[in-house]
Image: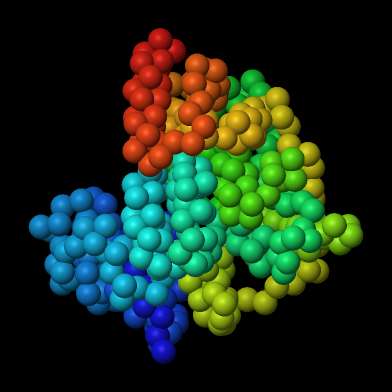
Length: 372
Ligand code: MG
């Protein structure tokens, strides 16, 4: 039996790689729907090749070869066994909740879903018996390591350290967009690449891990590991540590998430060799240089709407940085100032979450005018 899958965000970095995996495993999958944003040309070429029944794009009149449906309609379609949520940003949240409400399993590559509404999303998933399988390489690693969560004492999330690991704070302050986007290990979208340079990405991942594995923040540790071979690890109560290793390729976690619980050769290109890798380094993160990490932990521990504020102010600031409006360190300054001003709402519902998100974004944009 083929697994029936839809991909939200098939034209993005994760979506394109997912289609490469599916191409290799074409006898295992049937594609129900593909969705894109403004790149309808690429979406249409994907439709031609993979023949989904349905599609969605920001301009639905431009879709050729598939029946246009809204994201909500796609996510409430029970023909789906699993939906890969690979859109970037807050537009992933409502469709994911719709899919969960309809009992459809989720392969989750969208961080905002859990950072903005982790409590609601995980509660709903449990209630509906829906599996949320993480695509993010760190969480995918932890998912693979865990046999019995009740016996896990600590999650250890690895971070490559990004392009500024060996640079001084001064050099980082004056970094250009180009330097910031030159990630040494991973080729990803622009927003997440900036987040990887400030280590905000790791902070968001800590929050994601807290929700996915129901682990208190005190028991989630970040360690810098520049080679990106150990994708994360867990420590059991008896001190035994299980780590997941592999070459740094997003194809592996994507394939794992969409084929779970099965494994296939699929996209594998070469066998892993310890002697070729030769050495693995680990070090504590520099908390002064990467203040974003501390801010994320604080927001997570505060809970409620604090992580909504963290995410919204960071995203607005990253866009402002990419557009040359503010400097790299102003991203973190913005987040810090917004977090200080924020009045936390303890159990926001989805509408409140979006209201707070909009409000924080508007206030952040006002702040950029002063920072210039
Ligand atoms: Mg990651």
